[in-house]
Image 1 (cartoon, one colour):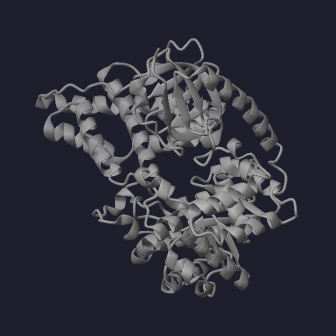
Image 2 (cartoon, one colour):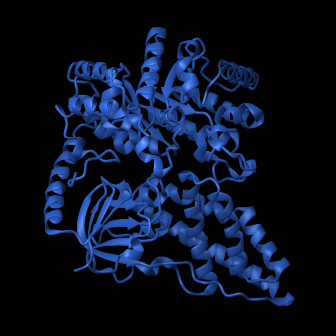
Length: 595
């Protein structure tokens, strides 16, 4: 009997499936080395341009099919690929390599993409790696066209019965062509929850788990697998008991999901009538409409980095303004919080061309970078200010650790307000300026910061990371990274108290706000504004509507007396379990059937 294997990865699209595996082995074709004669160079460049145009037309076709099948927001996923086909740094350099090195277009493209890969992979940030996945999608299509071996879409041919696709990775253009009636689920070695392939899998309703290491090398087509897209687990060669447990769990989860759908248009209010503001975190303006449909009361965190990461030039003011306007118009009666560029650290756009830092997360990033690059910041500020006329648009500054940073930023804002007035361009002079509480320094001086900020938003991920000196992306230290550490809880309590005394809103926009135990703790600390991923909105609304705020306060009072994170977690778990079954929730805190 084949050996049973259990792999835990990243939950990317919810759902539980059991079925045979189909291993997809698709790769970019090997490019042969070829030296061209001088009189062949012009025709090779022309051949490259024809391949560019053919690839552009094919992606446009896929984009149109996606818009018709899934919607406009999902179709926008292919915009970066279309931009890449017109990028002078890609196209121009490939043509130069052909001429200068007398090599084929396919080989020149391969070399240029390797250079991009080297630049992108230095960051390791999911957003940048997603751009790399787009680039590799484009490269694969171009190379296959140049070599005359056909489109990569052919790898999907021959899927006649429902299967769980297992692959090293999937590109967006392949994922969007999957048929849910033939593809039960997706399991990939690479990928992130925010990758375009994962977004498309969710739109298609196909359960998916990504980041599974080398699983594709351990599976053969036909092997039976269990895939749990909520918990992020894949079991190869499951036992009879596991099949039974997961089938029962599937029924239970489906009933749970139907209940969550009914909550979309109900208010997030606790049973003892404590109202809660439940907003969404977004990366792209088009996600605002999806968040609204899922019951969001505005946007609590608009990450503006998507406008610049992976680009070689700074986006113009008008482009930025239109993006912010789209999000604002989706919520005309609710707050839309735009975070100013949180660049640096692991998110450097290519146009900054920055040297590597020994400790980038403690280096030149976020508000520090913006204040040191006023021209970049001023363009950004003007776009945000212009968007304030379209609703309750608020501006938020990341990684604040000193009141001087707020003063400097406000001075630039005021100067750009004057310029907008001179130019006759409208903005709302009554907009709110807030700060993110992400460092122990900011939390410890929260009372002082209330003199300069109109609201606080706690970035629980960075606050936990900096307080505990634990890299949140280091798998070896995962057990040490906990927002329920007494030191982190004390900083949360201090920030909440400062905001309450000053009469300003305190919200949380990190992962903690999407964690049932985290919401229980935050409610107990008197924090009643949360911002989470759109997909997490129904579950967190369920938490809010199930837990009396008074009960949370009582258990948190006990938790504040505990001296270690295990005790705090145990107290919170005991309290929340009176009201909710934690095993039904998706995410890394989920309890699996075996546990």
